[in-house]
Length: 389
Length: 150
Image (spheres, each protein chain N blue to C red):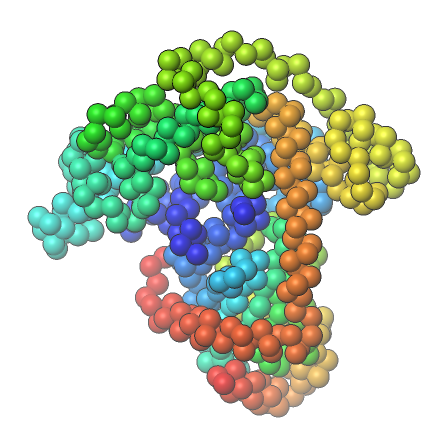
């Protein structure tokens, strides 16, 4: 459960910075609560969501998820300004949070009474002193484990990444830039960390675009993160593949970027036809199967499964088309299959915990009696606590 | 194994931890993030006051596009709660919005205790007593409140 706490969240902003907390909330999608990805504004009501989130919602019910105003796909327009604002916010986020924590710390050391006040001057401290404070105090709530980790770059794991990078370049030449923004966000974090060893500094220089995988938390080069994620989420080995080991020597002598240029642009050759919405009730199972085949997506399963798959494919495809930095259709196909895998896996687990009868529930309640007792205590304490809102 | 749904549930948990609404708590089961236990305190100035009502929330991969299944694990006498603990609450059915999170669901349930809707009764007896014999309704509710402490 500790992994939950590592999520970057508006609650990272300390008291006294409610405006920034609110700003961060506004830059997050009301549906998935992540930073808006390819933000789309609903023309009628003006609410903004990730393209994929709002498309999934509308496919289910033609209403704005926030205000339930009648909405169709044609009412969605890209909101590029919000996208740029969000990018800049994310770039400055960690820098600001670190400065706040450093200032708060030195403030409380100099004058314990002024603990909450952060003066203008201390906010402008140079990055060096902030960095040293950060490395001295890894328990800063806003930048917990992740920044602590990046300060101590594990040499062996970063070598593995470089190897994996090259392997990725060989296996897949998709220019996934989904996580480029992510990498930009992480950059200030890296600038802030104090590197003692020469080799670490060198490593940072060569992989300044590395991001940490949200799943396994290893640092991955930003332009390879999607490749890594697809494998990581599918449970496939992401490191030490035979291909990776073979290319070790070439990595050291030849920069990865140069190697990439030598590869043919396979992504450009692989393009699937643009799907359109279908009136499923008017289609026979065989006709739908043929349509799926023509679109280049899997055509297995019964009509209901094909229908779900087609709907999701339209959503993924259109959201990608909305994006300023679309990924290749090959990547989209992998996302479709990851989505379907998650759905099929869960149908088994949900059955296992179906609490339909009062007996099941009573059994569940006694199994988790301790957990419930803890929750009662928690709810009690949140109640008596003075409101900070 | 991380999916958008699981990631969202982690965010919901973090939100609930960092900014818990009054008299509400909830957490996923240690062995299954799709299954949550929650506790709601009966709101003040209602017959449910001081009650500690346990709930179980069951999510699937369609969350937040589809609502979770929510059941009371404590016995509760309420016009909109079925005998098996299931709730009759519009936001968990036809008025669900993918923008809701666990905190919003639990807050809505808490306010349902405050404002029962006798027009869509799940417990006909509770709905009738609520409309016609408030004193007896309160007595029956208080019984379940006392049971909830056990």
